[in-house]
Image (cartoon, rainbow, N blue to C red):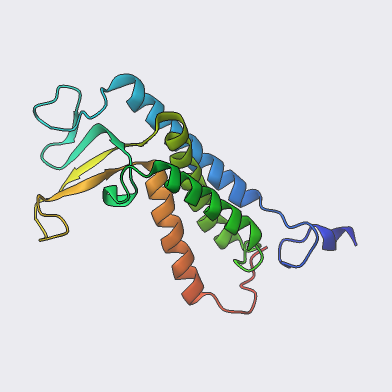
Length: 188
């Protein structure tokens, strides 16, 4: 009976272990916050006009820079100035993940990894919104080409570790949803 209560392969057990999800979320959250603390303490806000700004760190000439941008919106600056709504949306997303954890198959190790990445990223950006009133973005890529209406200057919008966790987590979940079968894949 004890083994059934702590089984991770059956989503209907009373106690399902979410250890991988929690560890992954904590790693993403910690890396995100540590990098943002470093940026916050070493670079002036809105230092992103390379080569005119002395605070900008050139990692790969004409391609990759470390900057300090305060993003008051979401991806690509969408919904800028609506940080409270975005913070509320983050809380709704986290609540929905918890509420639908069985439907989302979080008993599977791979799903725990995907949602750990997502949750760590959502929490990292949520903390920024609550503490700073904006999200700290610092990874800045200048591509060698332009795309009309999407990347007219060739500069990809700056992002952070939390954003990476969110994007990789969502992509992993979508991919797994298409390719995992209904039958148990042998994960424990």
